[in-house]
Image (tube, rainbow, N blue to C red; front, side):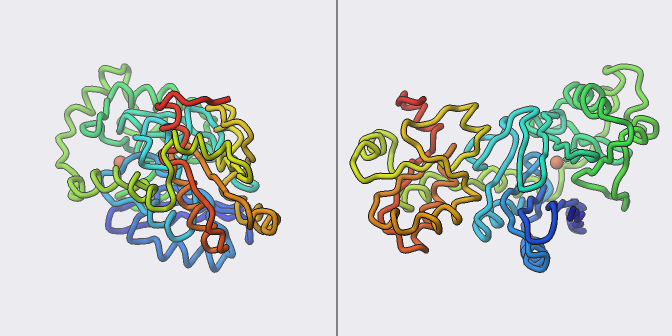
Length: 338
Ligand code: FE
């Protein structure tokens, strides 16, 4: 396995790059905007194809690199499903599995630091975001943070993981790089409490200054998605119109989502399932038959389908369109779904 922990000294953020081996698919957790070129360099050197990029939560102390990575590498952006839908392409629910080739990651909803914070469990290690830090816990005084939720997420979820599970947080300010669940249970000063009330009391009396970047980072990080305007100018079609066109002859309807998303949300009739990361292979294989067809892409929120239209243009397929707002908007319009 390839596993890298990359430090951003400005915001003291840890970013993780994971792949099952050289030449294979990769994913990145909590990238920092200023470091994107460094990640891409490393990906190239190790011959890795970035397919997914995850933020554990909306960060207040740095601007996330997920949008830049998406636009530079055509990867799928992922966050938990409590995050506003227009921020990322794929939103996972509690306990859902995120897959890349050779690697499974389980999403764990761990609110408290923010109301939309997730942790991600991968075999012997857990990426705790700012929910659980090394000998500390993420502050709970903004972004709908809640010390009771934090207590619950830590005591009833993270500390229930096997003792030797490695803890990899999103930040450290003292140079610690990893810990274990048992160490945190024993030595994390904030966790040596006898009740939820005692923990709430500690968290409510930290009196921390706001993060320096907060006024810039939070609004920017809420705008990382591919907005409806950009979706529209890339041959985006509104749901009602899309519904008409998809019934025309000589059209191919392509669902770019993954099987677990389809199981959860349903799909449109007569869809070909081509998960976005395998789109290149699909086009290569079906180049000749696709050339003369009208191609209609859709996904969950219109992010992957926007990129799919852009990629198709690079193959000189001029006749490609996609569903603005994805199935989310489709459903809001009350249109039919299977
Ligand atoms: Fe944070």
